Length: 287
Image (cartoon, rainbow, N blue to C red; front, side, top):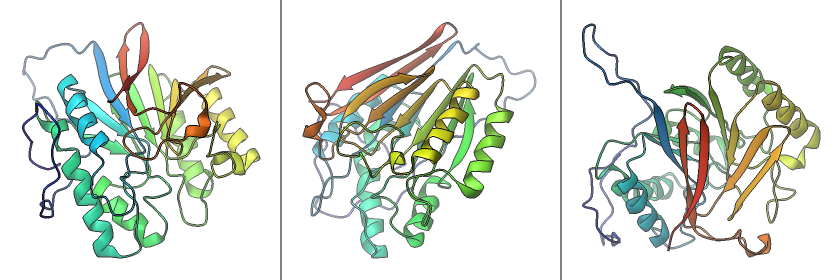
């Protein structure tokens, strides 16, 4: 992630391209034998998605304000639900878009080092070359990791030829990963497109292939997944299906979906707090 930017207000976009930098993937620092440790009793994280600024705009002002506000909360990690950039088949243009994204996210690092784990969205990956570029910045397009008593699974709904579904090698990897995570207190799954869209994403999300979507939901239900965080629609939505909590969060600075109905289409991020007794999810508005 780029060097910290002083917090305290809106970060204005520079006139020159930002420096090349990479976000930090989630890591675990090994504890040396005999090192005193403070027991960890909770986990706090931010979730954001849908922050592409639109054609011709380098940075979304909403994303800049969001990064400042979220950085002040000092999350242990930030999760992404896709559509961070406008996307391009031109490698130079694509890389410039990523560098502007990293610039806008710099305030996350103002008070502490905050790793990120981002799932790809439909604008981030439109070809195999786009997928390679995404993986070079974020360490892969699907993977999993542990944090405190939580297991996180980042899925790729944009694999060329397998868009809008989880199938093939990724499906069997997911089955194996969920099996190995049995007994973990919390399991959180992240997707770029929602399983159950509520507005403009209908027909272009995982609902396009109902049998694949339903099989995925059944798998998540049977392995007691705590929550699924998805992007793909410029809104906030929450629904629960057979014990699985589904959140759509796509209001981090991109175009909002005004067809979603009252109270859904607003700029926001999610603040998630996990403790021994349970977890809470708050949709935090961004002015």
